[in-house]
Amino acid sequence: MTRWSLIFDDKTDQRMGAFLGQKGAKKRGLSKFVEEAVLDKIFVETVQAVKERNAGLDQEALMANIGEAIEAGRAGRS
Image (cartoon, rainbow, N blue to C red; front, side, top):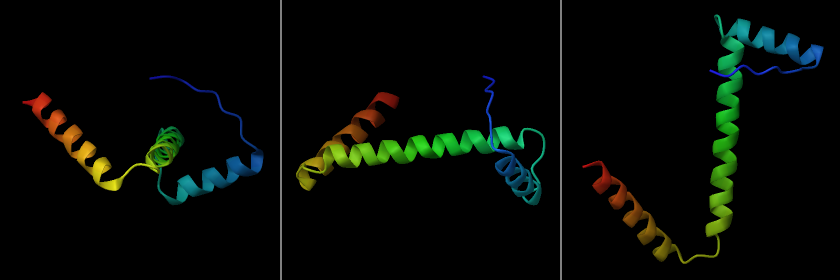
């Protein structure tokens, strides 16, 4: 585990507390919320970067490359 020190506006802190309270958040509720938000943001930006990188590629070739990568991954787990 890593500890982060974050600074929020007072109004944001109040809204976050109310939100987590409505969700019935327990101990570490804020930590879990922030971690999920960070992972979601990383995922969205990664997907966007991949889409941009592959925008000019032929779709059939792209799908073939994906299929090959999946098969290679499966073969590596055997």
